[in-house]
Image 1 (spheres, rainbow, N blue to C red):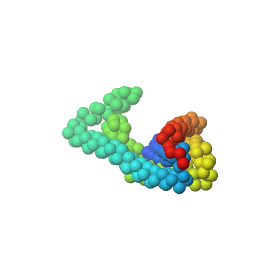
Image 2 (image 1 turned 90 degrees about the vertical axis):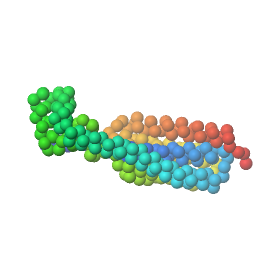
Image 3 (image 1 turned 120 degrees about the horizontal axis):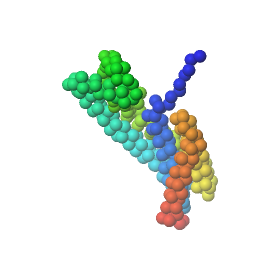
Image 4 (image 1 turned 135 degrees about the vertical axis):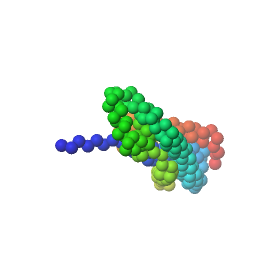
Length: 229
């Protein structure tokens, strides 16, 4: 019977951006809403602050992800160009370098030479990028994908506390937004852990803890610096 291995490392690029965006959307907008609400502000002002935070946050996430992942992509491109030059200038040295890598991984010297020779004959650059530098096609940086994924997930995450604010009675905005947002964070952490093959309970607790801390601090700030009407 065929054995299928369901590895998850190929998901790390988009999964990281998606989880980061959704988590930031929930935490930052819920914290913003709770902080403003704690300052005895009207529902209209609370919603205005939340919507402004959503737009600004989504754009900030997109720009931040694009710049960050672009820097990673630039570094990868520079390494690829450098390796191409090394292969052109000293092919024998690069061959020996690959042999040494395989020997250190436990392959016998003669077999390591045969493996290196065959791989370099097929695609020398790919062999060095994969085994020397750890650059894989499926894991290379994708700036546009990261930017759009993060912005979209931030918007989705931010919509949760905003929806709770819209439907909650004015006097109950803080507890309802906090409860709904913490539940959403727990589900997000559990889902991210499941997709990544990690411990689901640990994933849920991790994001919920930091969300609780953020909301508590902003509520305290709102009470300390708020106005009384």
